[in-house]
Length: 260
Image (cartoon, rainbow, N blue to C red; front, side, top):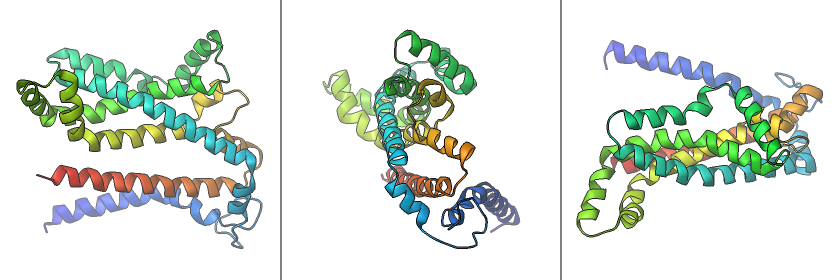
C-alpha cells in the first residue's frame, strides 16, 4: 500500500467521522431521563421511546409521512424511468437539456418552490390536502430517478433492447422483459432516495399542509416549543431505519454490478 493511498483513506475516514459525529450524537440523548435535551445524559431511560409509542400525535404524523412518501415514490419512479428511457436514447444536446430542466425543482430554493406550490394548490382547492404535497414531492423525486437510471441505461441496456427488438419483441415488451430486470438495482436505489427525500422534507410541507402535520413538521414544532428528548428518540429511529434501507440496497446493487 502506497503512502498516497494511506493518506487518501485516512482523509476519507476523518471526513466521514466529522460528517457522521453530529448525527450519531443524538443517539445517547434519546435515552435521557430528563425533560430537556442534554449531552451526556445524567440518567438513562426509555421513557421517551415509550412516550412516542403512546403518543397519538406523533404516530399520526409518522403514518401520514409514510403514506405521502410512498405515494410520491410510486409516482416519481415510473415517470422518472420513462424520462430516463427517452434521455438515454437521445443524442446531442437534447438529453442534456431535458436533464438540466428536470433539475429545476432542486436548483431553485425550496421556499420559492413552496410558494409556487402554495399558489397552485390554493387555486385548485388542495390547500391542506396531502395530495398536493404528494404531487410536489413526486416532482422533487423525478430528477433523482432520472440521474440514477439514465447512466445505467446507457451502460448496455440499450444493446439488450435492440437485440430484443431484432428478435421480434415489441417496444413495451422489450422494456418490461429485458430492460427493467437489467436496471432493477438502479430502480431500487432511486426508490429509496425518493422516499427519504419526501419523508424528510419540511419547508414545502409547512406551506401546503396547514394544521395537518407530517413527521418533520411535528419535529419542528417540538424543537420550537418544548425541545424534549422525544426529538432525539425520533431521530434515532429514523437513523436506524435509513441505515436498514440504504445498506441492503447498496449491497444488492454491488452484487448485481459484479455479477457476470
